[in-house]
Length: 485
Ligand code: GLN
Image (cartoon, rainbow, N blue to C red; front, side):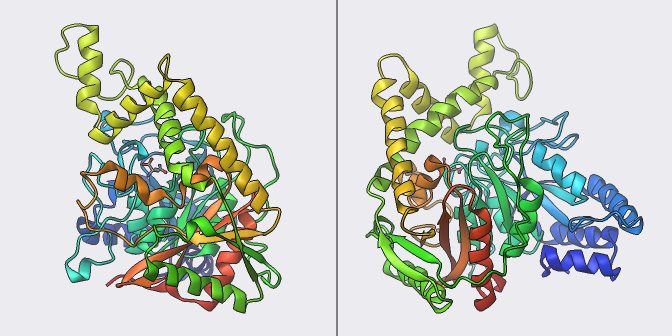
């Protein structure tokens, strides 16, 4: 069962070959047996999962089933789950049990899905390797058979590793600068960052509010579409969520790609990309040509400024968002404070890890009087230019294709002492968040036995087209079916 997709599991449940309680127990046993190698879960919620599974079986028996009723999956530990610990990968929230559900969590509950637990992540979603988690690094299932301990990417590295290791068929993620796509690429799974405003942010612990977006992670594009059918839609509790009709994302998966116009941004095929990586991406694009797509080069002249703009805007927003963790209302509080100021400073000094502190320092500096115009305002102007580049490109082509990462999964510890080299992991993903458009990572080959992702980028609200393009690719390739040893 652990090798089956969400769509297949749904059919097994429907035909009655297995009950949700049995299926849930099988996955829980598998997590217990295998996750010590990966550390992909922070919390496994056995009891709640089995209760949800029992209810799902009853719903199915009563003829009230959706595609998700009884199907096991997991949430990244950034989504608030009523009664189940939500740490955001931080000591600050080690013992935080939310009294409410995020909208995305509520929607999966309504659909009857069974949440097995909460997946590991970089602290407050800041990172590209999952090494900044207070709960320990996650190990990528790829490379382990050779004795190599590689990163799964981040910040949604726990979700990606768990899916690749067949501990869950699907999981949620969030993507502020690449956190769904980069780990999906490094673990050989399929991930989608939707258009900003497509999925509610309510109940997702905020990192950079103008960039954060939740999305699906799974092994197939079809499963990602099934997740989008649950996740997408207007929510009055998120003021940036957009009131726009939600299509059935599975309905257009099989449309032929003949005539699809693909643009290759020349700035994304630069010397930052190793030749072996480039070869995999170009081979994937060739598959699309065989399916009747046409390919041309396009330009995103301001893309090279994306990392610099992001590392002003994201820390600035983070410094404001994280000011709520002060030891007063909830979360960690230092022992025996002398006075209020001592409590604030020691709580934050002890509760946050180094990367989070670095972001708060950078962000506070960029927002401070005298520097605001030079950094924050300037970065916002650059952001507008980057957005305009994409708008111009989509006047010429339907989708853009590029690599997701400059190289495959790196060895743990390789980049921890050099934040800039870590930040450069996202050189092909960050501009997309700044523009607010959707993009996917799709398994597209291997380099030295490690997975490589193809990034498919679309115009605003083109998720159905991206999923269609990814699904068609998965009909003619089997990269997404490969299993780590
Ligand atoms: N790696 C980027 C960062 O560290 C993006 C993280 C994310 O998308 N949450 O900020």
